[in-house]
Image (cartoon, rainbow, N blue to C red; front, top):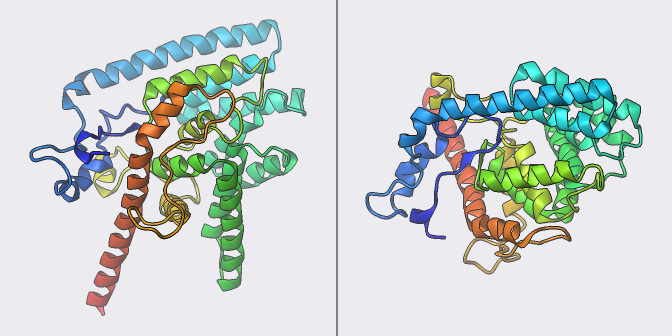
Length: 349
């Protein structure tokens, strides 16, 4: 794709602070991008004209979600329903505020107590939530309980759990073993849904190339199909990959030193700082360098599953090139930071 035509990626989670309120880290890459962008065009600069309306829109959206939550709580008081509970938990999570996270967890755990078979797949909402809390033992127990679930979201939880364990490993032997487990978990996820791996790595730092309208449509479709098809979306497809990227968006932390100074950054999920670099390198390692013959060619077409709508497939295919560019940028930035640290250490000596 033409870099000059690329629009800024949005904040990845629909319930998160709007992108116009956050100082996107892509502004930091603007200098490096000038050589590729058209003269006078900063392709990473957000539209500042929207700033005045961002907080108002966010507040209005939160109020609507809270009204829906109140309605669902009323329905639950009248009649128990796993479907209603999952809808309610989705709202608590979408609000993206820590004060609602406990309510989301309790709501989903109640679903599993009432229906241990979990026909509605509440586990696929609960497992990522536990990881975001740093509840690694609880997440591991949930994954073990539903080990037959080979959906991308559960495989991704297993992968991120392995990475968190690797971050805490001590000693060469323990590090090697945890590294091997993480690599094995990555291979399982990649075999299940390669585009989920690519989007997971690209959005791990909190920004997404997928339009929010597309994500909202898929979220609504998934919730609408809970009663008739708890396992939707189909494993290995486009819808699954897009929804997964939203669930784990920002898991490796959002923002850098500049955002930290301004108080607009977000911490990585416990144990996942730096995960974006590892995921990007592993995904890129599956393909040859752009424009070279080594390895498999980077895909230009998405892998659609039954139930994926053509318009959603086209949305993903339109940004695949940008996704792989993002993975390259993540790896290059990390290498540059390592070189700077080594230079500083050498200077001190």
